[in-house]
Image (cartoon, rainbow, N blue to C red; front, side, top):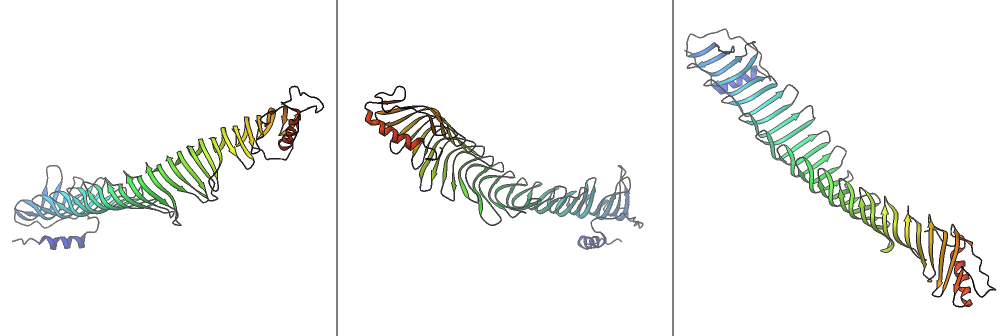
Length: 401
């Protein structure tokens, strides 16, 4: 009479005999009982079972062989089903662990032929419960809680870039979490389907915050604050670049307030000197003052066209004294014809300027009229004109605009 082993004892024996893989073995002893004991059973599909039988059903410990004599399954059975501890062999890998009615169920390890490994809990062939999944080819490790073959809730992910700790949905970073880069940087904030999305901050290895603001698709998008070594930017971002309206503030307290386009200040903007003193109000293109604008300095202001940060084209410079020049400019200097307004009733037309100097001016102070050059209600104003010309026309008197 065959005395069946206790399943727990059989399991211990199995663990001693088998490591990760169980080698084929031949069962030579066939017990006389037809309904119970150890048997070799040939199946119609060409497979064969070597092991325990209880009332004509596979129950206890047994090995199922494929038609080519390779092992299909080695482990515990119950009522013709894989049940208990066992090892299943598949085309893509091997499962070793607990079974329930032919399903991976309970704690177990699956080793794929490509080197991937999952070790943890299963529920009806799906990863379910606490477990660790190693994706060898991708260099990724996922560790946390699983449901329906996907990781959910709190967990950890390690890849070639660093380590993520936080919330998961469908095995992707989703919710709140932290990413520690191998280079020492850190991101802390919101995630959406594996990408930074929502409010978060990015921190350098020296613990200085580089950026704090909104993200979309793993990039800075929306309102945020970006810190640099010598300045900071407060404003809108698009795909990691300054875009839209924003303020750029230098440590020396100079400030640009205005429009940005793909990382460059372009469009309407203003520049302020330290103390909030307006320096320029106008148009920019690729960081340069270009187009219409007004620029202020200690002597007065220039209003007109700019090109590459210099007065270029038609423009008017007004000194604080009230004297005004109206005419053409090239690279910040008066060039070509222009008109000087010395006072309310003194107007001087200068036929030609060259690099801020008067080239053609021939007023005859012995005459009582000055055709085409000097216009005034009285000759007494000529002295005012001379003083104005001396102020604005002599070389080196003022910087270019």
